[in-house]
Length: 392
Image (cartoon, rainbow, N blue to C red; front, side, top):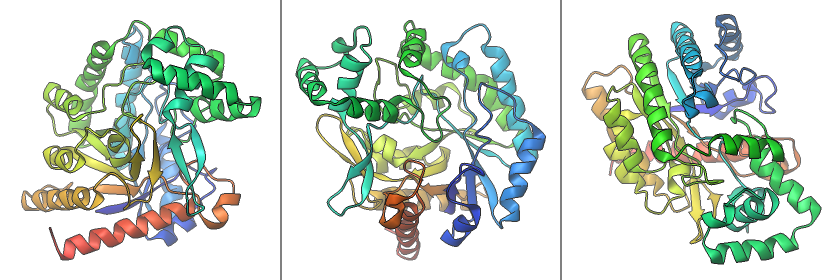
């Protein structure tokens, strides 16, 4: 597997020379300053690529080209943003960058309630607390009808939790949930998120899925033409937030997308942490069923709780059977090699990582500190080598 590392550009506290020391050879990045559905400039792509190559690395994966809200909503102006998206794919492919990770989550991107959850070891992890989230949604954001989206027992527990929150607690929770995280398309304030949620009030899961399929029906032929691979990232977490639909959360969701747009260029980012937050997702089985469409992998682990809360655990120690997942992907690589596929090698990155040692006191992007990801990459590299030498 191709070992890669996510880098957020020149402002990233983890510099490229540090990435090179990790042993990863591929960089996963984007033009993070270009949002709002704009077509990327070939000059800006070349500049970013040169910066990476001058550090002795390769820009291997784009994560992400944001999908404009108009496309998700299926509004009349969606066509112009789809055209801009296709033009960006062509420019990236012309530069040799052909693996493109993206998501179709409405309003909020990956969401956590706690960015510094203390583990018994003293390390700090990312956590999604279902009660904290419900307390924010129902009693702070006061979203219309929010209390109807939760079991009454959850609402009552959230009510008690809200009563214990200080003003600082609320400010921190709000920042963690809606103020934007690395990789997110936009940042919001409280009123802004209310407005964005209301825009999707008439969009249910069926409509959102139809809009995704319409987008793929236009974009995948472009990817096919230039030899690119589209890799849709699962919802994170893989269930509804703020009453908004989620349509990339389960094996059935992926089956529908692949059936509707069958080209191999219509692929997936196999994120074990996102998919693993649902107990009903059998990740080793999914890795084998969808193996030929896994063009990129995010490898991380989670510990789940019965109420849908979870925290991010050590990469090899959680509810995801990482050994079985990696074994399935190595088998897939062998199948691709035997079939003569030029894209046989699956790019993977150690997704997220705990805050460890002096990184606890440094400025870092949540989930993307250096030391925690180094530890995760070392564990995954060891696992990969062991399985390659002794297949299951």
